[in-house]
Image (tube, rainbow over all chains, first blue to last red):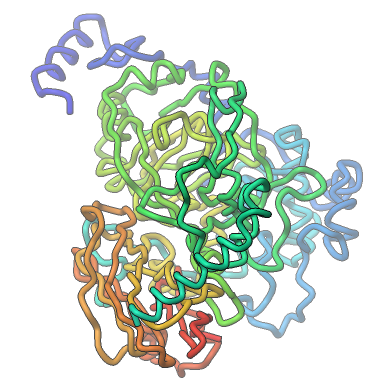
Length: 190
Length: 424
């Protein structure tokens, strides 16, 4: 643990040197400060509010084209069915409750932003990270449309994507307040 | 019984003496046909292991030790597959001794189930950013300049579930392993970066093809998470996240992000694809998919092993808990009627396997042996039926324990000494 004295000295030094742009860590003086541009490129974690989303846009119609061009269809099949990779469209009828339907990301996800996040970081297999933001917006729109979550003509972008109401609504478990040295579930003996 | 065993040994000796003239030259291969080898005479009965560059530089186990990892679950995807992808692979607990899993035998699971990146540590960096005063990027050499810790911790995959179809303890429990991990406490790095008061969670992200990421409570991060680069006295193996991974002691395996490249401190829960996998309808069930409950299993005698006859055996197994250190382990040799306190073979440590044992004289009758773990925060490993009762659901043969399956594992011993899965 850093001594309180060390921290005070570093803070003083920091303020003497004129603020937050310290090149190295204060106590150990190791490492460097990443640039804003490095962080922007690296930060692919998309919050439910979508604040990290890049500029761009797309619709389901455009997504259907990308789906064919980028070879998504080769693994996931036509319209997300019948491929070797996981299905992307539910085969169940509208009367089947959501939790009884298949575990399909663009159907069961509590936030549409996760669909964007996962396509962006993990697809297509072997060429991860090569899709442009517009292509990711378009594919997200297409898969949400296939699962009847959004209409075909909805333009999705940084503003509209986080606002999409997902079918699951509020019907999913929320993370509990983690406590150290406590049972994993209060009152659960096992 | 002792006199019986002695007379048998005499017989074996006599047999070997007769056969001796023929078998000595072939290194005593004929001995393998008997339970007991012939007591060696003064001459050198064993061939020499010729030194080689390979054996001298990195070493190798005896060719007579053949314990290996196998795919998990039974009938699951083979590793490697035709594309060289690696899926889930279980450690051979039935052959384990002590508490350290050899690095070569540590269980493997991959984020999307496939891709092991080949990372040059000189090219790799770890960045901490988000709700910190000073974002920080470290090379692997720089990371190693920080004060380090070395701790024993288990990792267990959420898929480590037991059912009646499995045969060996490798099948039922082989997706847990325990190693000595060396690295820098995440709290050391977060203090260095200046954690903001609004920090509640952090996202840890790997550098593999899918950039697997998990959301972890910041309290956990400031308590005991380790940014680990060492494993059992050497760098991490690629299968375990070389050059750096995060250890989240006691949490399900998937949280222990391998090939760690980024930590983002946040003020809210980010649902990553991993968390989508954890998604459940109810808060209660979701809570059981994070910290691992108290758990134990008997590794000897266990499924497909065979007791040669009535007599003394040391029942031996492993116990662990995601909530702290193991406090006690009890063993029953009569199907759960009477529970006896087991002894520990090493000092129990927080979120680490402990080796327990119970001395037992088997009388040759059919029975069932079980073990039960209690941890130091008072959680007790339950029978499957007890767990079903708590959840107020009917107990059936194929009852699925919510969250990670930490229910008690029974092994059946038949009159002929054969050991089989008690859930079958």
